Every structure is written in C-alpha cells, then in structure tokens.
Amino acid sequence: MKLGIMGGTFDPIHLGHLATAEAVREIFALDEILFIPAARPPHKLHRTVTDEHHRLQMTILATRSNKFFRVSDMEIKRTGPSYTIDTMNELHATFGRTTELFFIIGADSLADLQKWHEARELVAKCHFIATTRQGVDVDFSAVEKFFGASAIEHIHRVTTPDFEISSTDIREKVRLNRSIKYLVPEVVEDYIAREKLYREQD
Ligand code: ATP
Ligand code: MG
Image (cartoon, rainbow, N blue to C red; front, side, top):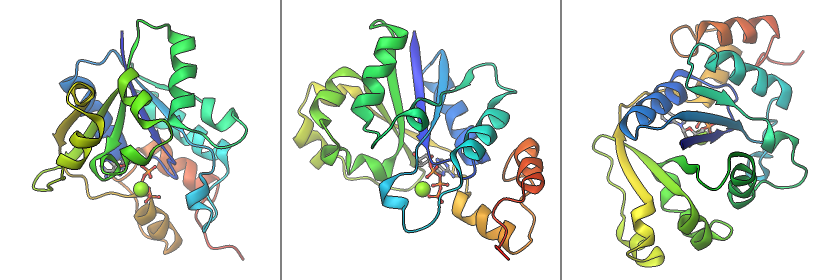
C-alpha cells in the first residue's frame, strides 16, 4: 500500500490543497491520501489559528466526496510539538511497515528539509513528494548534497497545476465580506458562513 500524506494548517482547506492531492495521487499511483490537520504550529502563533475542531471538521467535509481521501486527527490529538518523524512512526505503527509513506510538501519546504528534526532518518524511511509550480525552479543541489545519492531516490519532484489560492487570501476575503465561491468546496463555504469563521470580532 502506498499512502500519501497531506499535512497543513487547513485554515481553511481549499481547492489548491484538494486538487494538488488528487493530482499527486494519480501521478504516483497512491492508494489513499491522508489529510492531517496540524495542531496549532509554533511558527504561526503570531496570529490566532482557528480552533482545531473547526479545521478538522472542514477537512472532513471537504474530503468526503473523494473515496481516496481520509482525514486523521493524530496531530491535533498529540500533546506537545508535532514532528514529522513522530507522525511517520505513528503511521508505521498503525498501517504496518509494508505501507510506504509519501509526504507531500510544497517545493519551498524542500529547501528546509535538511533542517527538520531527524531529517536523514526521515528521508531514509519514507518518501517526500515536492510539488513545484511550472516555471518555479528549486535549487536541488544542496538537498542532494546533504542527503546523498541513495536517499535522494526518496525525494520526488512533480510539477502540479498552479492554483493561485491560499488560506490567507480566503480568510481575508471572508473578513472583507467577499466571495470565496470556487476557491473552497461548497460544504466548506457553507460551514464558514454557518459558524461565522474569519469574521472580524466585535
Ligand atoms: P496559509 O495561507 O495560512 O499559509 P496555505 O494556503 O499555505 O495557508 P497550508 O495549510 O499552510 O495552506 O498548506 C498546507 C500544504 O498545502 C503545504 O504543503 C502547502 O505548500 C500546500 N499548499 C498550500 N496552498 C497550495 C496551493 N494553492 N496549491 C498547492 N499546494 C498548496
Ligand atoms: Mg502556507
């Protein structure tokens, strides 16, 4: 079994996340994609990340219509910081060693990969799929040098369609009372309206 992992804050999840996950699933013939909403990440503490149950719920709603998509609350449930190595170990324990894990990351994160906690062990034991936009060049030589020739076979690069969508932009649009139609699934649009998310506090 080949399992794709899509981690993110998903505040909110949008069509860029979903379309990218679906494209990667097809290209790499993955059996399933597991969406794992992150617990409030330390580097995002400068702004208030939306309550975890809302982000989890939106992720569940957004992925429900795709039989290859699943959602896990493992990072939200974990206490303390979430390292990808912990997530990998937990997934191996759950799905068994024969399940190959493919972490999907933005190409910009690829440049940082060597700074991740236990980076070499991580790359030795699972795969990374770095998604790049057409025309965006990522310097791969430093990554190659750090991880070495054999490990680099676990780091895959793929060009995916460019969806000019970000959660930041969606939150801003909602705040300004502008339309987010066709940027998020309808179920997520409805959820945001119903729960009055991303509105200015008064
Ligand atoms: P924010 O604007 O709050 O940073 P975001 O839109 O970047 O949010 P995240 O939850 O931070 O969303 O992203 C989760 C993962 O999805 C990351 O690996 C990120 O690179 C990727 N991603 C985000 N937006 C897109 C997009 N439009 N197309 C493809 N991948 C995306
Ligand atoms: Mg982001």
